Length: 327
Ligand SMILES: Cc1cc2nc3c(=O)[nH]c(=O)nc-3n(C[C@H](O)[C@H](O)[C@H](O)COP(=O)(O)OP(=O)(O)OC[C@H]3O[C@@H](n4cnc5c(N)ncnc54)[C@H](O)[C@@H]3O)c2cc1C
Figure 1: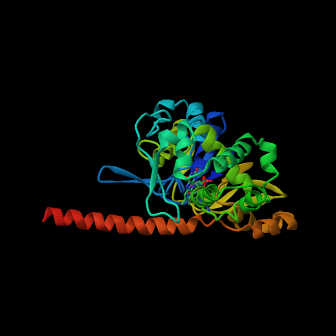
Figure 2: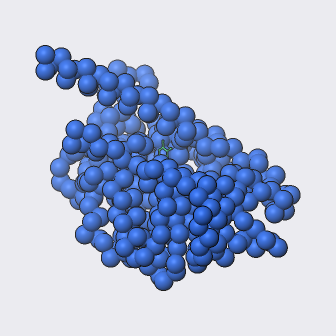
Figure 3: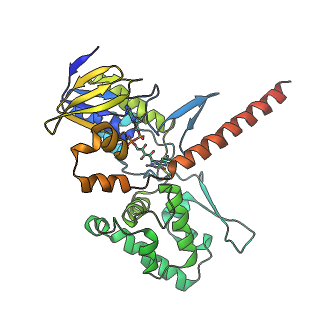
């Protein structure tokens, strides 16, 4: 059974764990990355079938320019492997946005390229009159110009509460409702205004819809490869059962493969499992434990369930069609 020492142990190989481990290793710390699954990437995995890559989460809200992934790849010295599927200034109309008002039959359309250049196509998409256009510009400008400090004051304010204090044309309200569901997988009356406004700022200043050749899972593969190339240790199929704590200080982890030691453990196993299960609530102040217990888990897991179900049915249909063609 292993009994090894490291500078840092990172739990979980999602985008958070992988980038943390790779960057710490790059900066000279000896890291151990532990993943309970066989596949790396956490929620950010892609699979390959018939020469196509499929991302297993319906992404759409990674900034086109200056994303955190871009920064990590730069620091790891592998920018040439950071290959966006569509560049921010790609002149082709590849992504089309379709929108239909509840009281209308026909869909209106605008391309992402048009919408990136100016808000006009969005205004047409939403059927805004001039006074509504003015209100939309005012509200979007307010969100874009908010400082980080101002945004942080909205951690305990829902997006709905924030919007209710403002003049919001119906179509923009609907769009923000859709956006809360799409990018945060939460309804607008549960999402923190600080979270949604941060993402809206990214969409407006850095562009939305960033995707990468080979799927997001490719980014995970490159980060894992670089981590190991730099001398990091990666163990898959190994579940962390406990974060070891002695006299109030972390000393390592207890896993299905034995014990590993480090004075620092970074966990991306989720805040509730980390505090309540891996560490144990006795190590924390009661008020903090109650706060953690009171956090409402994201609803994203329901979309994953739904998405995987749709994917399974689509793949079955695809296979049946091909079988018919071959006969
Ligand atoms: C449906 C959906 C759509 C999304 N769309 C977007 C989007 O468009 N844009 C965007 O930026 N984000 C999106 N996200 C969010 C994004 O996927 C997460 O923010 C991101 O994956 C979090 O990264 P992470 O590394 O913190 O955790 P995760 O990706 O959750 O990875 C955690 C890892 O830890 C491992 N682990 C857990 N417990 C243990 C243990 N005890 N021992 C060992 N390993 C363990 C897990 O197996 C997993 O690999 C979406 C999420 C969902 C569900």
